[in-house]
Length: 231
Ligand SMILES: Nc1ncnc2c1ncn2[C@@H]1O[C@H](COP(=O)(O)OP(=O)(O)OP(=O)(O)O)[C@@H](O)[C@H]1O
Ligand SMILES: [Mg+2]
Image 1 (cartoon, rainbow, N blue to C red):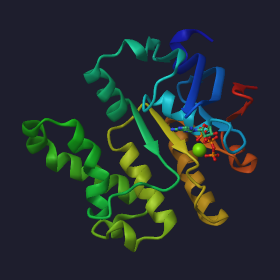
Image 2: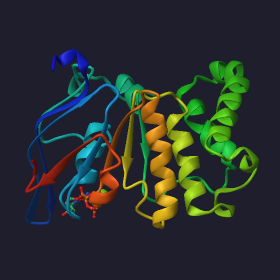
Image 3: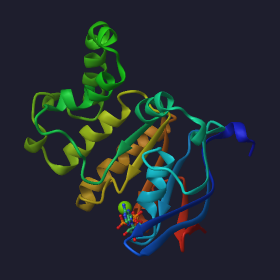
Image 4: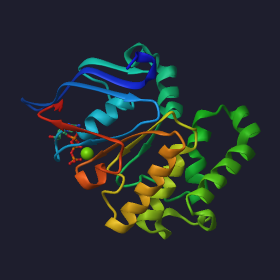
């Protein structure tokens, strides 16, 4: 595969955490390449470093050693503004526990990333368009009737769909999902996987982390993280 097809790439990534005198070596030379349009699952035991590598791929954390490339460009060369732009617009995050804001309603939660990335003047001009897009996303996710509800009034599956809507708001090139079904029963979890499959069918690149092989099977490719490396 040529470098051009690769949207996200990790090369020899190392990461350790220092806990007092002890050092936990989590990633020991992870290589990984995600092609545009792929739906990749990263599986591994609890504590194997799945969340760690996902955070590094999304620039929420940085490697001790090694390189992460987005569309061929080394993330370590990004300035602060460019990094913020990357985190806010190029990737979208979905977490196991949703991380929605209970003070905001469903629509406002989904609109939030557009607000964050806009200037004040830009936001005033774009507010209507952003709300329209958020409404359409929620409609698609089967939450058209729930826009004015608060997150705590929704079920787990509904909350995760809101979180997916929020992650998609700025049309990210890659969706990064960390155990997106981890807090849901299997039927509801399958509903979330259906949503991810549908998005991938329309070209959305997805990297999903899970400890569950059965869930990973819904992706088009599975890679296993063990002993700090990709097998
Ligand atoms: N901020 C931190 N400080 C210290 N140790 C950490 C930190 N973050 C993670 N670790 C340790 O790094 C290892 C890998 O953690 P990580 O969260 O990436 O695992 P995981 O594969 O996502 O596990 P799970 O399936 O339980 O979510 C664990 O041993 C964890 O305790
Ligand atoms: Mg984790």
